[in-house]
Image 1 (spheres, rainbow, N blue to C red):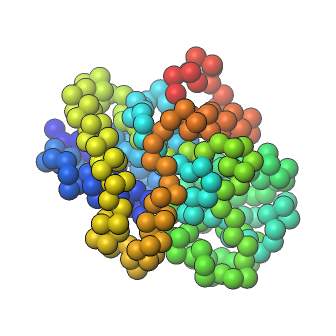
Image 2: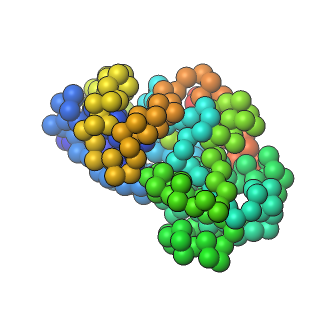
Length: 274
């Protein structure tokens, strides 16, 4: 049996997967590329075994997964790749239609929370795959994530650009947790040794990657997206661990998401297991 491992092919996780593939024995691993919303669906259906997945996928269906603790994609401040492009100040978007990337789930939920809880406004969030240049002709705002957000960040001098990670941190003082590493519960029950081995490989890869970001940037195929210096700065703005402060941020995110009906409410006993 080979472990099927989801791979988000964005710059944010490039250091982790680059190091994992080069420093671990991956003979028993099969890597499956997909955007976050796609990987969420695949791990839920059992097509893959382990994946960095949208944190909201874990909050919605935590009974199906085992959390690989100590790992996330988070930020305590700007994340630089979860961006709202807007013609108007964000507080003026009440009743506006806001396009959102169809690749994202956590970021869309975070935007709804920010608009409703922090700015006290309501907007219609509409999934879209239309390019920014076309979309912004007839729309007020557009939420982009990942490499697309990085690419478009400085191309629109006439638009306001809001970093959702930055807004959340300023309003709450807590990190934004965008993705978590999760495994299907059946994997831990039927093949605990495989899950343990992958977890060890992932632990080592994260530690190793963060000590050699310059070398990874120089060897990457991402230099058409960002300069080497900008790539390193971007990776350094991301938190790849998952400590008590991250857990507080995730718990607050869940509370808001439950209050807004984005996810179903769960009993306190379930919350305490996260």
